[in-house]
Length: 190
Image (cartoon, rainbow, N blue to C red):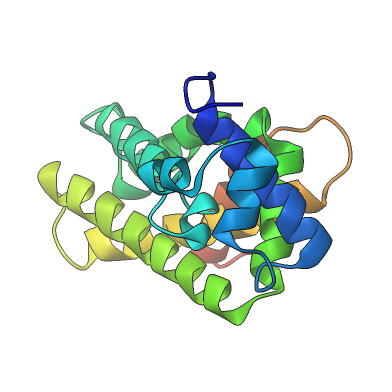
């Protein structure tokens, strides 16, 4: 297979996930990933900075979906409702990739360095939502609190979604998380 074959990025991701699952993240090399995908190391580095980034390449799309979802919320929406709209807009990114999300999470959970990188990604998402809220005219501390609460809802919803069986999409878990957060803020039990 040569570099001109289609979907090099997807093939690299699939090869990496297979190898991470079989051998572990630490024991897998870029050379092995490229070889399994039928590509060269050079092609790998055209798509990813390092083997870790295979697991985090979707972060930019997720951030984009969150910000555009927040921007699309009605101007009169309270900050937490705008964040809920952002989370719902991002939910669709996941629904067709449940098994890949499960595999990815298993790899991350097994490696402290990747867990740290995941926390950096979540902090980046919170920052992006906070800035989008500020652009809507939301002051502090409301913008930061709503963004951080949104990331907490996202994290809990994601964990519940990948652990679930059945057909419920990520959006259903996000709605439950938002409802639970609102109940907590009202002094009730979720």
